[in-house]
Length: 156
Length: 83
Image 1 (cartoon, chains in turn yellow, red):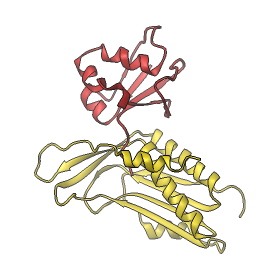
Image 2 (spheres, rainbow over the protein chains, first blue to last red):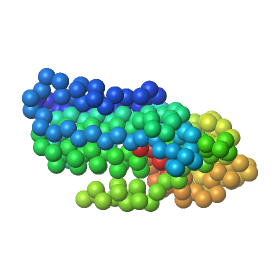
Image 3 (cartoon, chains in turn blue, red):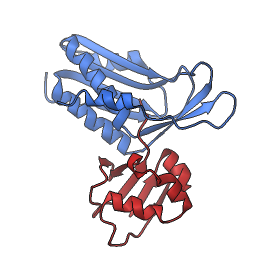
C-alpha cells in the first residue's frame, strides 16, 4: 500500500453502477482480498408509496459522510472506501445509497461497511419524505430508535 | 447570521433560510431555539419540542449547550433519515 487511503464520497442526483464502482476500486491492484458492498434501495411499502423524496443539506452531507469514512479508515485496515448517496425523487426499486469497502481480509471490509451505514443513517443530513401511491399528501419518515442504537453499538 | 431549515422544520417555518440579527442575550443553541419560538406561530409550531431539533453550526453537528458566538451558518432540522 502506498500512502493514506482516501475515501471517495459522492452526493448525487444520478444513479450509480455498483459493478463500475467495484471495478474502479480494484483496478490494477493485486493486494485487495475482500470487497463488501451495501446498496440501499427505495421500497414501496406494500404498494403504498409511489416515491421517496430525499432532501439533503448540500455541503454538510458530503462533509459529514467524509468524517464518518475517515473514522472507518482509522479503525480498520482498508484499501479503499466508497460512499455514494443520492438525493431527489426516487421511485421504488431505485438505488438510494452505496457503500463499498475493500480490505485484505473480509472481516475489516464487512465491519467497515456496516459501521459506515450505521453512522450514515443517524448522522448524515438527509431526510426522506413519502409520496403516496393514492395521491394523498405523504409524511416525513420518522427517525428510528433502532438506527440510533445501531450507531451506539460501535462506541468503544 | 444565516439560519437554514430542512425537512419539516423548513415546511413549518415556511422558508428555507433567513438572515437574523440576534440579541446579545442569545448565547447558546438552546437560547436560539427559545428566541425563535417567540417570533411567531410558525416558529412555535416547528420548534415546540426543542429537544427533538438537531442543530449544525457551520456544517458540523452540535448539541444544544453549544455557544453560537462566531457562527456563520446555523442549520435546524429533524432527526436524520438517510441511508
